View 1 (tube, one colour):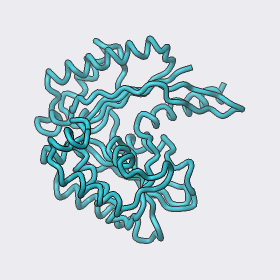
View 2: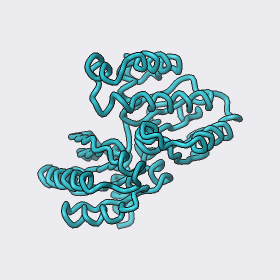
View 3: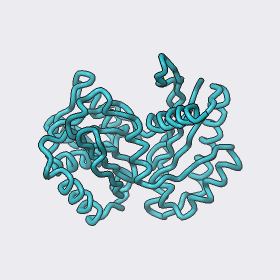
View 4: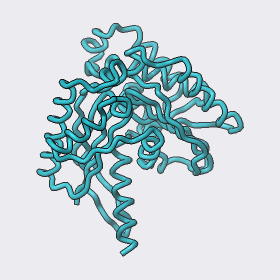
Length: 297
C-alpha cells in the first residue's frame, strides 16, 4: 500500500510517495520517492498578491505530472496542501479549481495553524527526550511556524508571515518580526532549557554542511559560523564554488537569519534536525485517519 503527500510551498512544490507498512499492529511508512520542483510561487504572491498565468500553467503541469506518478506508483490515498503563497494570492481559489479540472488533483489551501499541526504530525521528536522543552521551528518561503512543547504537551503554536522568499522580496515587516520575538519570549521565559527542532529544506542543508553526527544537535555557535561562512560568498560563488542549487543558494541566507533570531530569543543553544517536513506530516495524518476509520468499523 502506498500513500502520497503534495506540499505546494512558496519556494518549491514537493511530492512524497511512501510505502505503508504494518507490523504487530503498528503502522509506519518508508519514503519511496521524493520529487521537488522549485516553482517559487511566493515571488508572485508576495509582490503582486496573485499567481501569474505563467506560474499557474507551470503549477498545473507539475500537478499533472504528480497525478501521473501517483497513478504509476498505484497510490491508494493522497493529500495535497498549499501554504503561504496560495493563502495570500487573490486568485488562489481559482487556481485550486483549475488544478482540479486540468490535473485531477484535489488541493486544499491550509491556514497557518493547520500547517503547524501538519508539521508537528511528522513526529520529529519521537527519538528524543519527551520530558524536555522543545520549540519546533519550520521555516518556509512565506511563513515560519512555531510550536512549543513542554513535557510532551503542546503549550503554544503560531504562524508568522516571515519566510525566506518574503524576506528576499522585502515583504517582511518589522511588526511581524516583533510579534514573533514577543511570542517566543512570552512562552519560553519561564522554561529552563529549551531545545530547537528544525524542519525544512534549508535547515536540513545546513545540518549536512555542519557535518554533525547523525542524530546529534547542531549548536547555535555552529549555525552562526555557517551563516558567516555562507554570507562571505556572493550568490554566484555559493552556486559555482560551494555547489549549492540555484534555488537554495539565495534562500539559505535569510533562513539562517530566521533560525538564529528564533534561537536567540528563545535562549536555545542546540537544535535537532530530524530531516522531516510538511510531506512527512501529511503522510502521518493519512495513516492516523486510516487507523481511526478502521477502529470505528
